[in-house]
Image (tube, rainbow, N blue to C red; front, side, top):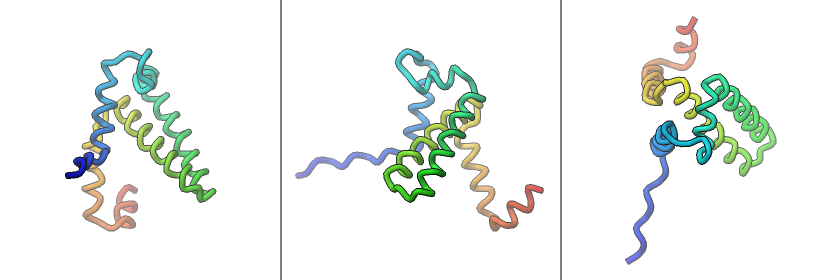
Length: 110
């Protein structure tokens, strides 16, 4: 018999890790360091990572795109945590939007 396959890492796993860092120490956790600096700092860091993702994408560098996409997702989730907005709320908004075309949804935002 072979080794059991590991369960794939999920966004929910990452959310749980970030949430667990809230009560941690900034001395041992980069996530806690970001959270302690507040939502505005976390949002700026997310923006920096988003720009780095755009640059990697325009250069068609698969390894850089992958690394920067991971950074974007991580920093988005940290910014959501710092803003006290649960990922479930974002997912609910995405689900609501799936009931109409993207063009209609964008027009409805006014």
